[in-house]
Image (cartoon, rainbow, N blue to C red):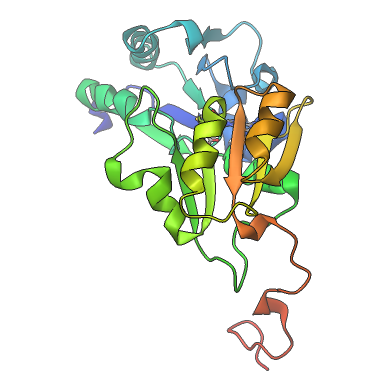
Length: 256
Ligand code: SAH
């Protein structure tokens, strides 16, 4: 496909904020880049410190899609090394496809380097597992409807019936609705954690239950950059442990 010898554009997951949480490959691509486009609102500018000096850097926060694509396409056609930074992992709420569709039309090659999603950074901040034996083996990634519609079958009240762990993106400004929708399936005592700016210097964690989390979040004044995690798995469990390390549990790497 790369007969025209345009350079490959790299979509790189930057991780949740801490510059050390980018992958080694992502860091190397930034070190080699001639042109970097990043979304200023959530990609922490400190990762740009990996770049060489005097390269072309664009903050996409104030640019629309055509402008962003124009910059990247021109740079790739000029055979420059282009990195497009996405927050967390590019596969989640990253608007990747609208960019790759244009690159396909332009016959510009690209690849995607995964990143640490804020869902995993938030679980780490809480020092919790999202899956727990005997409690849930399922994690749902979702959001409340905003300007982007959410299919009817995926309303929070419908997802709530599974009582699985649920990670809710892009919805902290609607925490009251989130809690009332989830209460249609989860019990009011279900543990909830809100992690604001996981891995940033001003990270905040608020824990509570479905009954009281909305009040706590409103009191803390958190209206953006936060992930909501709900489910029994993130509560306290002195009584349940994984069987993986149990001495009676035989598996392929450890015969009894
Ligand atoms: N691709 C990203 C998600 C982008 S959507 C990822 O994998 O994390 C933006 C939403 O992600 C925010 O509204 C918030 O819900 C969440 N988010 C991104 N960075 C975050 C962080 N450092 N801490 C908590 N939530 C974060």
